[in-house]
Structure formats: structure tokens, C-alpha cells
Length: 307
Image 1 (cartoon, rainbow, N blue to C red):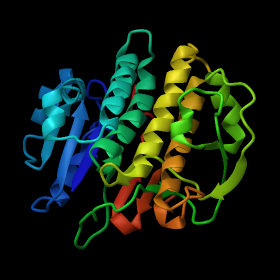
Image 2 (image 1 turned 45 degrees about the horizontal axis):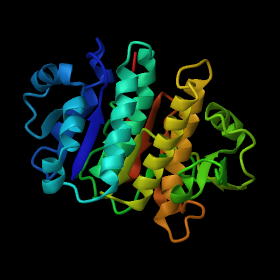
Image 3 (image 1 turned 30 degrees about the horizontal axis):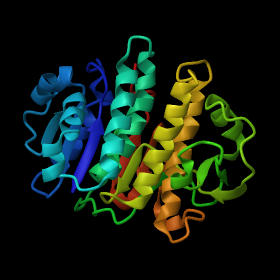
Image 4 (image 1 turned 120 degrees about the vertical axis):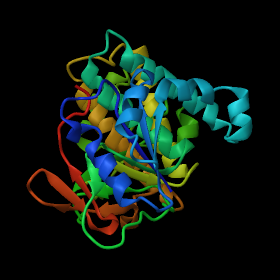
């Protein structure tokens, strides 16, 4: 079982924001078949290796070095067998380079991390957790192997309106299939893509999904659908020169939620409406924390991780 955390940037002064929860999970999972990967920029690998030196079940990996190696023929020969891996590596490399560019505000690295989480879900599998997610509750602790693409939800009732439609005039979308976005924000996302008057689509209701934790088997159709929607919209925004703007942060927030929902619908045949079994239902403690009782995890909100 693999669990992934990511921090893009120098370590913060408040270690609750980057390593305290991963350390707690590493301690709780000691002796179990859980491998924790902490992803960071190459420049911070040595620092984080020192931080996790006492936790033998934590491996620190540099993002840039991994992407460079993953694109080589030797790596693919031994580890990857999907033709779509090349596409995913190239797309993720472009997004990471953009996030690290001087012209990109450091806070936008939170959106790079969203793409990275989807990338890991498809090409690696397991769980991706925000840095504020750690163990909670007593008793035996073990994370089950994911059997489908899944996400947390703050409600059991259907509380979010999602619009499903086609971007038929955009080259390359035919292979992607339908697109899902928050019904109230379709025009904002499509406007950032310079795609005016999005095609008519149907609305459907779903629980209030969150994206601070995802789980998936490797190469799951749901993880692929989520990753491709996010990356193709990002590419259209790049071509439209709208990646950095006053409205871009809001667009990215709705894009990641819509992309995850698109992936959740692939867990059942036909890809229509995400089944309730695709969500981990959470308990909101009303104090800045949320519990995931089924997994004995707790999310603590610290604000954006990219400052």
C-alpha cells in the first residue's frame, strides 16, 4: 500500500503544514505494509530526508528528477506499460515547470499539487493525502487497498449541482468523452479556455465532494478521466494566456473538483452520475478539522499549502 504526500517549496516555519501529519501516519503504520512517499522539489530532498530520518517507512522523492527519469525508455521498460504514461508525464512536466516559473505566483503551486495528485493516482495508485491529513482514533489501523477511484464528501445528501457536457469544438476532446464542472461555474472555466457558449448539457446532483484525499488503483479509468480533464483544460488556458489572472485561482478550484467528479463517474459502467459508494463520508467537527471515520484519518485545514 502506497501513500503519497506532496510539498512544493521550502519547508515552512510551522511544521504542522508539511511534515507533522505524515510523521504521525508513519509512526502509526510502522510495521505494516504501508509505504509513505513524500514528494518535494529536488532542491529540498536532502532537507526532508533529514526530517524523516527516524521513519524508515518514508521515502523522500524529488519531483523534477522523477519526471525526468519517468520519460526515459529504460524506466518505462521496467515500470510502466501504458501508452498514456508518455502523455501524462509530458503534461505534468509542463504544469510543474509553469508552477516554478518566476512569472507564476508561488500560491499557484497549490494547483500544481492538484495536478500532481491526479498524476500519482493514475500512474502509481494508492492514496494521495494533503499535508494536513493524518491518523485519528484508536484501535488497529490499516488503510485498505483502493479498489476504485474515490474521494471524500462532507455530505451524504446530494448537495452539489454538476453539469455534464461535451466540448465538441475542442480538438482532442472526442477521446476524453464528457466533461463535468460545477453547474454554477461552467462559464468561468470555459471562458478561461476561450471556449464561448459551451455545449448544452445535463445537470446531476452529487454529495459535496472534497479533494484533499484521493484513492485509486493504478491505471484506473477514473483516475485517467480526472487527470486528462484537468490537464487538457490547463493546456487550453495556457494557449489562451489565462493561467495567471484575477479569476484563475477560482477557475482552478472548480476545475479540480469537476475533474475528480468526472473520474468518480467512471467507477460504474456508462459513466453517468457518481455512485455513493465512490465517496468516503466525513464528519465535520466545526473546529477546522474533518474526520474520515472509515479510514481513521483526520483532515486539519491550514489554508493554502503554497505560500
